Image 1 (cartoon, rainbow, N blue to C red):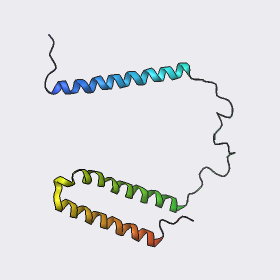
Image 2 (cartoon, rainbow, N blue to C red; image 1 turned 60 degrees about the vertical axis):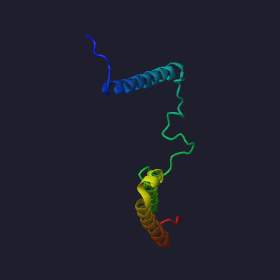
Image 3 (cartoon, helix red, strand yellow; image 1 turned 135 degrees about the horizontal axis):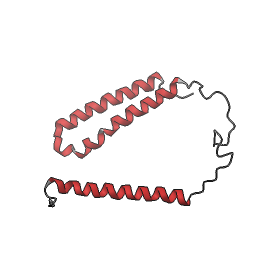
Image 4 (cartoon, rainbow, N blue to C red; image 1 turned 180 degrees about the horizontal axis):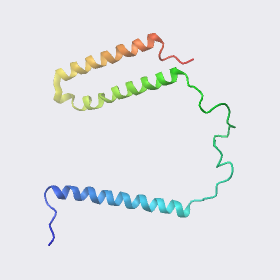
Length: 125
């Protein structure tokens, strides 16, 4: 006895078909690359570095703290700017209160940026 797909189960059928097609294409492309790809590495390809430079110094050398600081600042501001997209899409629905809330958020963001700028956190020597 078969049960017809109806209601909520029909929605999952499209997802299962999509997943099966994606898996099939991925498996086919993987097999194709193994079959047609060249598998002849030379000694230079098997070396530790492929950039053309001979290894120099210790691989565990310390990085300057400013590198991490700039990376963290970028991540913080990048994530905060990501809040602007849903706000811009829903601005018509959230009204004047939502607009004022986002102005407050952007002013705090701007004050933080000015503080970092004045402290020299964005300078790179």
